[in-house]
Image 1 (cartoon, rainbow, N blue to C red):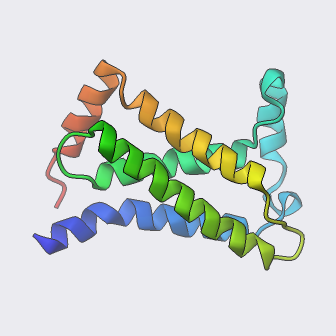
Image 2: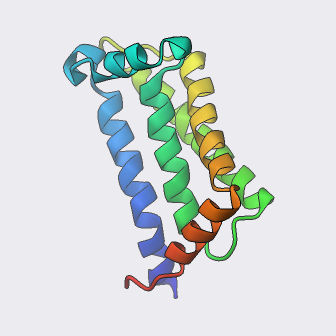
Length: 138
């Protein structure tokens, strides 16, 4: 039973590794694709799409790791876990040349995680996600 829990956590742990890796890169090293997204949505220029998307995905991977239905309490725990990891991400950026910690990034992390949990509250999306979570892949 413990092995199944570890396997279910793998996507979240893997994605945290991706975030850590991307956090060690400057925007110039990443190629500027986030700037292209901002051009598509000019009314959302102040949103940091990189942090938003990274933590949107992280929250979905955390949701995947929870057994059973996603209650409001579990969704809150997921958002809190994402924010805690966001704090560690900002701490990491403090030591990366060309990067600086920023509270706005943490806000964007929270927006991404919260929006993912809100999206998973939409009945037909929730039902599909819950059915996928119940699939036996191991």
